[in-house]
Length: 402
Image (cartoon, rainbow, N blue to C red; front, side):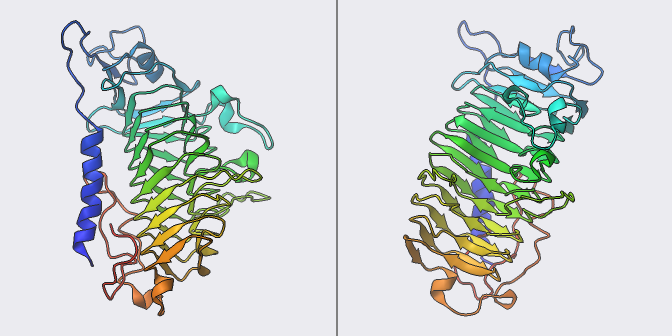
């Protein structure tokens, strides 16, 4: 294994975290002191919001918080009857933080929200989308697990937010969705899986969607997106470049819920597109892996933009490893192993990829086809752990490294 590359991948994620998560600042001059607001299952929304006298609901804490404040949620399962609505923004350099209490696990359960059980063919009212519904900027949301909601996190018109170490699973729509006019958001070390949508028979529930909008500088780092009804990652109708790096998508588009007329698309990374419109967007995918997805590992989905796909790997996908036939893509040092077919390159350039190098790229050509390390527990720093999974046995410098 190329250990230098593995160390680089883990180190890069740690560096992003270090840069992206400065300590909560202290007040200077006439600025008000940053407050610590504590929430606990045995709290009282009429309380002081301190550790000794916590609030009972996350919404009450959100309503009290201002720029620079930190909300810490004590461990346990918080069952919602109304979604958590975030409408107040922090400030540049002075975000509002919502996080778990140190060392404790927080689950936000949206199964009792009415929109979680929207009937087949029904629509979810915009304000009810998400166990966390956010229309605000300059927030840092970290370490929470969101389950069984109508979307886990839904953020529309959101700038300069950091979403760190979240888990969104078994939601009745996309696990995490960012859309609208949204710029400069960082999604780091997201685990999103088992998301499904009975109301559409699997047609739209992705692990992570950055869709239907535009905005510069959005980044996804270290995401793992698996066993979702539709796609792992979906950038449908997002008109600005998104960067996705050191991410893994697997097992998407399989009918695990016995839907009667299953409609899941089943791609690992869907890099844009939009039906009859197909807006051009120059998305970037690097150092990422897509395997065992029902259809394609990576697809442009009709996006005619100039995609950049570098040092990424596809393995055992039912369709094409890299289906970029409609785009003007730059494909460099990528690896396809035992996909239905390796590549549809489109009108761009292809250099140093496995299909350019020739030879047989099968299970004997890589050190391991066992994904258990990268799909298992994350490292102490939250990064995907290093492994030999799909690393070329002869040391050829192609494909992803963790």
